[in-house]
Every structure is written in C-alpha cells, then in structure tokens.
Length: 249
Image (tube, rainbow, N blue to C red):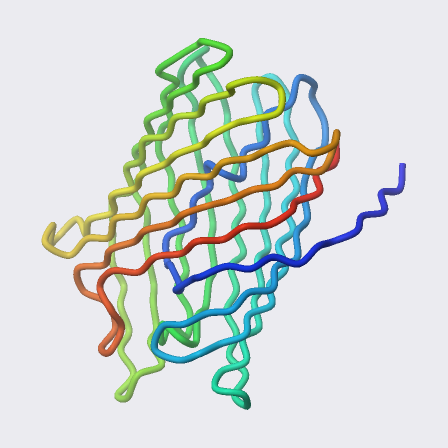
C-alpha cells in the first residue's frame, strides 16, 4: 500500500556528533517484513557559528526471525551566518544474523561527511557480535563488540588522511513503560586498536511518546567525546532535538 506522510517542524539545540547510534534505528515489530520511518527537522543551532538547520532522515528495515537488514540516510543542509551553506550526511547499512537465541552476528558499512566538523569523508566497515542480555518484554538490554576499519579525510589544511582499525563496543537498554511511552539509551566506546588513548565515546537517550498509531513525538539527547578531534573542533559535543516522526509497517 502506498504511504502518504506529513512532516512537521521541530526546534533543537545541536552540535555535530560523529558516532551514529544504530540502536535507535532498530524498529520493534511483532511481524516479519518491511518497516521504516521518515522525519523532517528544522532547528536553530549555536556552536562555532549561528546556523539554521534543515535535515531529512529516511530509515527502512526488513526483518525475519533470523535476519535483519536496515538502511538509514540522514542529510542536513545548514545556513551559516546568513549566507554560507554547509552540509553533512550519513548513509548506514547493517545486517544481523541471529544464529543463537541470544547471539547475533553483525556486519555494517557506513559513509559520512560533515563540513562543520571538517570531515570530508569517514568510511567504516565493521563486523562482530551482539548479545541479548535480557528477555523481558518491557525491558531489553544488549551488548555488542565489533572490529571496524576506518578511512578518514579531513578538510583542514594541510589535508590529513587516517586509516585505522578500531574496536566499537556498545551497551544499549530499552524500557517500554506501556504501548505509548518508550526510552532507548545507548553508550559507545571506540578506541584505536594500536593506541587506546585515541578513542571516541558517545551516549544517546531517546524518549518517544506515541500520539497516534504511526505518529510519535521524540526527544533525544546526544553527548560525544573525541580524544583527538580535527584541529579547531571541540573534544566534547552535544545535541538536543525534539520532533515528530511518522513510522510505517
């Protein structure tokens, strides 16, 4: 069936985080098949510059009892200081195979760019395992540990290229208070395998309130820390966003 959706305006305070919370992309459904969501965000931003931000996120997922494939495309266009346009984007593809009731194998590919954070591109490919720690219907907890290869090019002068192996360990838990209210929280730790003092950390908590069957209000807080960011970029960044999301299945 063809879906028609109306998108709404939101107001947020944000900086530009560089770790993507894929746990927030996993849609909880009772049946196999396709599901997804789409959102449009408009916000006022204040960090190094004053910005007006417009972003669009599309997320689709295909699920069976043993397999999960999800794809996310998140693109933003920012107007800086009234005249300069800056953009950033993320594309993420992930596959899960559950070969044990509580153990899954994961593989992912990711591409991202961010002009404000001086990232011309950052490309990731990783694989590892995901462990289900709880089977309670209203409380879910997961632990994942993956190895990923990262290539990165900066826009600073002179340009810097990085090619590194990193670990990516995450812990995620979800509370489903009832059919209309849920909380998802995830924390990531990503050290460079050859130099553990070079690491990134990220935390995201998202509270969702269902308004109608397919329409929800969401508020999300992100906090990231990079021990060795690009020159001129702060080590700590944060993001607070409120908005409406339409989901389909």
